[in-house]
Each structure stands twice: as structure tokens, then as C-alpha cells.
Length: 542
Image (cartoon, rainbow, N blue to C red; front, side, top):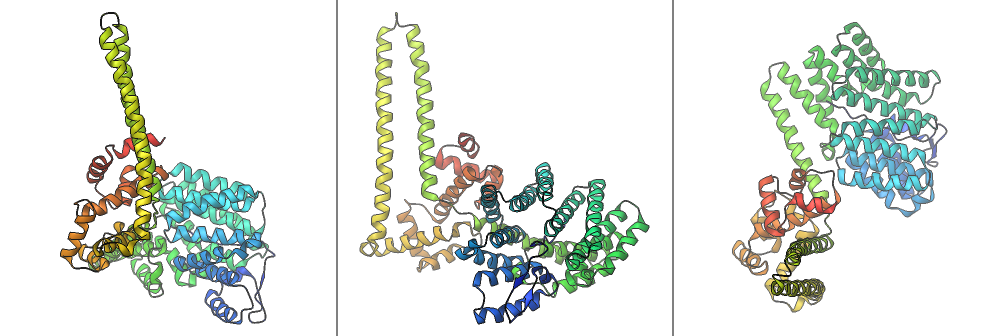
């Protein structure tokens, strides 16, 4: 039930952006009032070439973000970040990368979000940028929440507030208000209603102060709508029905409550009251305006859950089932999307794995031989001949191990030379081998081995041959294996990358993210190929 707040992206109180004669002077905070109109302005401005593309992309991202269309907003923010000119404006660059990180989280690009937050936090520390550090701590808290690390989540959100409080400007105060709203939502989800109430009241005092000063009233109105909806819900849950109704009436006085997004915020309170038809009507208005690129968003999923509860409340179980079925489909899409995000540096990871395996085998052999050597030393007087043999065997073992190490290095170099030679001389290779090499390169580059939806016929079409010839080529150039064995080898290599680079993931999560959702199958295949279990491999990395 945790409702993620639409966290705003703000300049300081005096910030404004001159968009030229075509649009006049427009304060960035006004985007929240008319994002659609702003997008039309930006289309005209882009054609005129009056402003650089990265500024227009940033404003487009911000407008789509304010409309909760996070996937599109992420793409435009990414485009702005890739433009080297944006780094010349340090303040703008800071806001662009914050916007990029937020949209990555809200559009479920979790892998990208983790990388962005880590890199931006390092950048912030290097440049002593408290605003960036505070925002990254906030987003890191949200990421901890996604892996159910509650204490870490609370800690990072509170640390974020503490850092941002060092500069109590209008923009940072609004940001602090939003973080307090996030904490309130998390406490509600965790059933900590007293903590949620305290956090909401602190936010209420902060917003009241901003309103009394006449600051950013459009944004304050939006935040007040979120706040009053939570206070109404909390009051109702705690049996304070008169207070709940008072906050509900306050919610209705906000401008944001008149919008499709705003109506969603009061649905949890309406469900507590049993006003199921009102919830259904509110969500119908929202669904009519949904962008299909953003259906994985938390807002859309929350609306589906609310609709399912409301339909069940009025006894329409068929529609309730339909809403839950749609939600299940979206979660599956989300899971597959996350799988496709992971990138595996296959060659380096395989080399590290082989190196660690060799070290483990050598270490185990040396320990065994050493124990034997100690034993024979103790009885050296009686078993001198045996001691000599053991000593000789020990020397032979060392020599053998050195040869193995040398051979592994030579094999690695030979493998690289062989692969490079084949790609450089692909036209001289047999036709079937050329087909396989091109097919193999495409499967690896596009990570098709993680796509559950692709069947044998799909892979055959990708190679451009019929089923029988496809099976024959796969068998010939994978050492006699079949398609499943070929794909599983790639999935296991992907799991090695995750085990090495993502210690926060459980073994089961690694298997699922590597398209091996069955723990039993994952362990068995991993053990058969590498002669070591995933758990032991991870322990050796520490």
C-alpha cells in the first residue's frame, strides 16, 4: 500500500528559465501547472533552434515527469545528460542527473538507478555538493525499500532530510516535505501508524509555513493534496472519524484534487469508508489517460489494486479478477524488463572464475599434501624411504601445478587469438560456422538468453535456417549440445556477474534474474559446469 510520492525537481526560489521570445520567461515550477502546454511550446522552440537541445530535453523530461510518465521522462533526461554541454552549467547538470535517477527508479530501471545513484553520490562528495548528496541519500533509501531493508530505508531518508536542512531554501524545503511524505507512506505500509501520523504532522507544519509566505503555491497545493489524503486515511484507520472527514474536506479544496492523478490519492480513504463506486469512477478517469509506455509505474499498479478491491467490495468479482490479472501481467513484464537490464562482462568474469577455481584447487591440494608431509616427518626415522617418496611427490605436484597455471595462461591467450581470428576471417569460414558466429554474437549482445518468450523456432528464424538445420548447427558448434544447453551456459555466465557485482541479491534472486527461476535447477547446473555451488562461489569472493 506504499504510495510513492511524485517527488518534485526544483530550482531555488529565484530560479527562472528564459525560453526566448517564443515562450516568454517561464519559471520551472510553473511546469506543474501546464505541462501539456509547455510541451507544445518546446516543440516550437526546438524547431527555431533558439535553445540548445539539452535544455529542451531537460524541460521535456521535467514536464513528462510531472505528468507521471516516467519512462518517457527518463529517455529525455538521459538524452540531456549525454550532451557534453550540460556539464558546463553545474547547477543544471545537478538537476538533470537527479531527474534521471528519479525517473529510473519510478520506471523500474533498478539496475540503472543503482549505478546512477552510486556515481552521482561520488560526484557530489568530490564537488562538496550537499544538495546532490541529500537527493542521492533519499533515492538510496527508496532503493533499500525495494529490497525490504527497512532500517536502512529509514536511516537514509532521515540522513537526506538532515543534509538538506543545512540550506533551508524554498526548493530544499519543498524537497524535505516530499521526503517526509515518503517516510509517512512507508510507515503506513509497515503498519507504523503513530510514526506515520507524526511525520505527516511535521509535513503539515512545513507546508503551512510555505503557504503563509506565499511561496510556490502551485507546488504547495499539490503537496497538500497528498498530505491531506494521507491524514484522512490515517485518521480513519485510527478511529478518528471526525478528524478524517475534516482532512477529506481539506483535500477537496486543493486544485490538485480536481485532476485525474489527484483523484487517485484519496482512493485509499474512500476504500476505508466503503465508497467503492467512487474509487471505480476515479480510476476509470485515470485509466483513460494512461500512456502505455508507463503501465509498469507504481501509480498504475496501485490503481489496479484499488480497482480490484473496489470491484470486490461491490460484488463484481469478474472485474476484480480482471484487474488482478492485469496487475499480474504487468509485474511479469516488469520482471522481464529488469532481467534485460543486466549486462555481463562475459570474458572478464569467466577469466576471474577460472583463476579462482585454479587457486581453490591448488590450495586444497597443497593443504592435503602438507598434512601428509607433516605426518611422514613425525615417523621419518622408521619410514625414511616413504618420506623421500612423499617429498618427491610434493615436488612433482608443485611442478605440475606450475605447468597447469602456465597452460591456463596460454590457453586463455590462444582462445582470444582464435576468437579474434575467426571474426577477422569470417568470410573464409564454412557457411554453417559463419551463421553460428553471427547468431552467437547477436544472442550475446542483445541478451536474448534471458527472454523467456523466445522459442526454438524464434531462434531458428534469428539464424535464418529451418528447425532441422538449426539443431544440426547448434549441435556441431557447441560441442554436441542442444539449444537449452547453449542458453543455460550463457545464463550461468550471467549469474557469475550478478554474484560478483550484486552481493545484496540472494542466491534465489540471482537465479531468477539469470532466467533460472528454479533454485534446484540453478544449483544443479552451476555445480555441474563449475564444480562449485553458487553459495561457495560467493563466499570465495569475500
